[in-house]
Length: 275
Image (cartoon, rainbow, N blue to C red):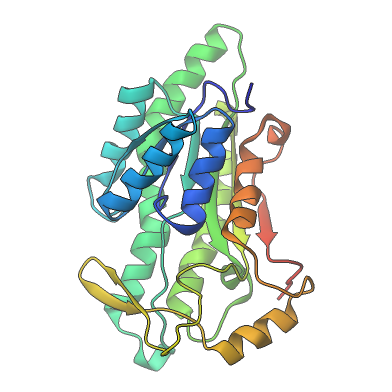
C-alpha cells in the first residue's frame, strides 16, 4: 500500500533530473503519472522505468509553453486515469544575463516557461478539480488534492545575472499563495518548493566551460564556474549541493496525506541556505 494509491499525478519536465526523480517517487507511492518532457525520448524512458518497477505511467511530450499544451496535458490525465489529484509544475531552465545585456526574448522566455505555463496548466485543471470536488462534497467525502509549484531561492533572495529567472520564480510564489486561497474550498493544498543549489545538468561545471542545452531551437549556455561552485558550497550550512532525489523528496512529501493541512507555504530546499 502506497501513500498515493489511486491518485493521478501530472509532472512537467519529468524526463530528466529533479522531474524524473519526482515522477519515480510518486509512482513508487502508487500514483499513476503523466510524464512530460520537451523531448519524446526522455519522457518515454521514464515511463518505461515506472512500468518496469510495477507502476503506471504515460508520456505527454512537448513544450509547456505551447498555447494548447495545458489542455492536452490535463486531458490526457483524465482520459487515461479518470481524474486528477496532483499537479507538479517543475519544467524550466535558466537563460542568464545582466540587465543591460538582457534581451526581450530572454525575459519573455523565462516568464513563459516558469510562470505562464504553470498558470495555463492550473487554469486547465480548474474545471476538472471543481467538478470532482463538488461530487465528493455531495457524497459527504473530503478528498485532498495537491499542487506543488517549483520556485527557487533566487526568487526569494535574488541573484546577479538572473533578473528574468528570479522575477519569474518570485511570481510563482505569488501565484501559489493566491491559488491556495482560491482553491481551499476545493480541498486543494497549494504549496511551492524553492530549490537552492541542486546538482543537475544545468548547474554542473563543464570541463571546457562551454556546455549548452537546446531548448526549442535555441542553444542555451549552462553550467556554473567551478570556483563559483566551491564558493557556493561554502555558503551552504550543510556544506554541499543537494541531489535531484533530495530535491524531489521535498516536493513529493507535500503530496502525502500528512500534508493535508499545509497550504500556501514556501518550503526552501537549500541545505540551510537563507539568503
